[in-house]
Each structure stands twice: as structure tokens, then as C-alpha cells.
Length: 139
Length: 323
Ligand SMILES: Nc1nc2c(ncn2[C@@H]2O[C@H](COP(=O)(O)OP(=O)(O)O)[C@@H](O)[C@H]2O)c(=O)[nH]1
Ligand SMILES: [Mg+2]
Image (tube, rainbow over all chains, first blue to last red; front, side, top):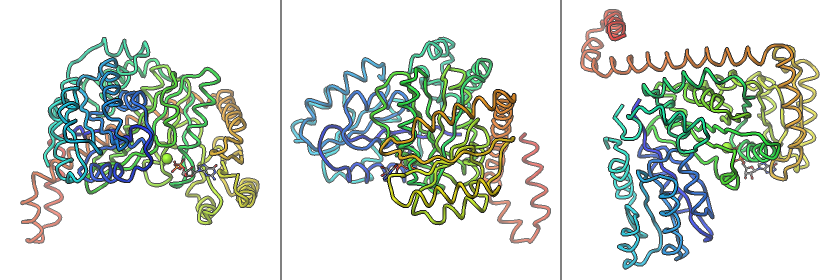
């Protein structure tokens, strides 16, 4: 049986709702991925521990609070400490365009701003899984 | 299957690390086993030599009954008693996209950072020929890796549920007030597999009625007894954490009952037989799928000609050749 892409979708930080994250999680499911949805108010440590236990190929975090420059580096560091060097990390949410390159230089593979189409998100998550984990997926 | 960088490198170091408790190593071992890679089957073989000690507990019931919330409470209680807890949560795969949305962790994220707990979500992948072999293999592996209590959540429907529930030591069936059909389902035998019936959401006033109905069904012999065990009926509020201690006690009593009767080991053995059966069915099914795909044009042609019997004979021969 072919390996299916396994993705963690988590809401990082303290902001309140998760409609957007759920829409993305469902879209990834409809694209054939196995999506572990963790819900609201996750800490970087919880997200990384979840990724370890689930053997996730990609971690997707949604953050709306504006605390990305503070919280995302904590995920990157926790991933590094845990040895998750081959796990993809994508970040979506309200992020000022000038922060995109900062996040990418920290080690984030893709950044999705509000309004990014679901098709694009699916394609990029697949390609991150391919690049990091060597999983081939025909779309 | 496509080669994966990590997985394809055979590595007994990995199994050693997993046995020493390294979570990433455990996780990689489980993935290899889930996908029955050649390394995975070797790991499974080694772990099966070590397994047979864990008390395996299945929790089933309709969506929304509170299974994940209850699992979260059980994790807490077992960890506080000093046990190592493995958790397997099975969600259905979509027959169309083959993807899966696995949301059970929402109810137990505050347990993630506890040490001594390992939580794994797995998709049922039934239509892919997976049957529920994955869940049984994960159970066997966690047992061999030294987890003392293994909790398995499945949605109470379909073949996966039946296979999994017939392979654990103790089956906990959840029922809730307000699900009128639930009692009908219990009576119709759809869910008469429970060793322990839990009326959850006992914080709601209608719970007493459901409790009485289930009690009556057990007392009047409508609910079957498995191997001479009279099912217990308990009221619980998973949300308010009421009645959890009693449930854990009931599970211990059931486990002792099985051990005394020599059934604890019997169930491990029948679980292994079931696991082997399902792995084989999955492998055969993969061959059937391949033969159907590669003969697609031939099938159309023969259907047009009306040669159904010849078609089936010839496809069956191809399947046997491939095997
Ligand atoms: N009132 C009440 N609600 C509960 C109880 N247990 C679970 N729930 C709620 O029921 C819903 C479904 O719970 P969940 O554990 O996800 O159910 P599952 O689908 O069976 O795993 C959630 O909103 C829970 O908070 C309970 O004991 N009392
Ligand atoms: Mg659940």
C-alpha cells in the first residue's frame, strides 16, 4: 500500500477560532492526505510532541494572533531538538508580507497568507512532503 | 510502495532505541509496521516475542458518545497509577479521496506532554485493502514495546469495529442519553459485544433512564455474556470526570477474571491469528486490485460479449498466477 501523506494541522497560540484551519484540514483530507487535527490553543511543545508520536510528514500551523515571530522559532527549535529534521513545516495566517522571508530563513518551508487558494495549499504541502520525506504522490 | 528515505534503511538500532523508550524511534517502528514494509514485519516479529502482557481495552460507540473524552480520563488515571499507556485511535478513510480527518486528539491534547503516554491516530484504509490489520499490528507492537495498558477507540460501525473489538481483552461500549436508537441498537445485537456498558453523559438528567434500560437488557439476558462474564453497567460523566475510578476498577476486575480463567492469553492468541488473517487478506486484496486494473480493457470487452463466466475464470487464474 502506498504511503499516504500524514499532516498535523494545529492552531498555534491563544487566538480564538479555528474555522480556517478546519477548512484547510478538510481540503487536505479531500486531496487524499491523512490529517491529524489537534484543535485550538496548542503550544509549540504540544505540536512537536504530536508530530513525533504521529510520525507526521508535515506540520501545518495556523496563527492569527500576530505572535508568529515569537512562536514559530520555538517550533523550529523544538523540532530540531527532537530530531525532526526531515519533517516539513508550513505556516498560515495573518502574517505581514515582510515577515515571510524571516520565517523562511528560520526554516519554515511555506507561508500561506489569507486568500491563498486551497489548490495551491494542497500542491505546496504535497511538494514539501515530497522534498522532505521522499513521498511521491500523483495528483 | 514508494521508498521513503527514513524507512527504507533497515536498522536494528531503531528497534533497540524504541525498546528503550525513545518516542521518535517508537513512532518510526510503528509506521514501518503499519505499512508492512519488510523492516516492519521484522520489527513485528521481534515485538510479538515480547508481547502478551498488556491489558488491551477497546472503547466503542456512536460518534459524539464521548469516547475520546473518556480515553483522556482513562489515560490520566492509568498514568497516575504508574502505568505506561498506549493509545490507538482509528478514524475512517474516505472511500473517494482515501484521505482521513482524524480529530480525536482535540479531546486529549492536555495529555500530550505527559510522559508514559503514546498516542497514535490511524486511518482505517478499509477500501484500500487495509481491513483493520493496521490497528491489530499497532496493538501487538505497543504491547511488545512495553505499554501496560493499550486503549483503542473505534467508531461503532462496520467491519473494522467488529474486528478490533473482537481482538481486545475488554470491550467498553458507550451509550448516551438522547440517542433513542442506541438502545434499539443494543437490543438488536449490533452492540451486544460489550464487557462493560458505560452510560456516558450521566451529568444529564435522562441518563438514569438509559442506565435502567441497559441494566434491564443485561439482567433479562438480552445482552450476551462473553465467556461466562456478566456485563457490567456503569454511569459515567467523562466530561466531569465522574465515575472514572469505578470504570478503571471494573476493567481491573474483568482483567483478573480473564486471567483466572486462562482467557487473557487465549485472547492474545486469537488477536494474533486475526492479525495474520487480516495481513494475508490485505496482501491478496492488493493482488486482486492489480489484476482488475491491468485487465480493465479486457473486462469491458468481455462484458460487451456477454462472456461473464469465462471472464471470471480468466481473472481468477490471473490472480492465482500472481500469487
Ligand atoms: N455533557 C457531557 N458531554 C460530554 C461528556 N463526555 C463527552 N461530552 C461531549 O460530547 C462531545 C463529543 O465527545 P467526544 O469525546 O469527541 O466523542 P466521540 O466522538 O465518541 O469520541 C464533546 O463535545 C464532549 O465535550 C459528558 O460526560 N457529559
Ligand atoms: Mg472520538
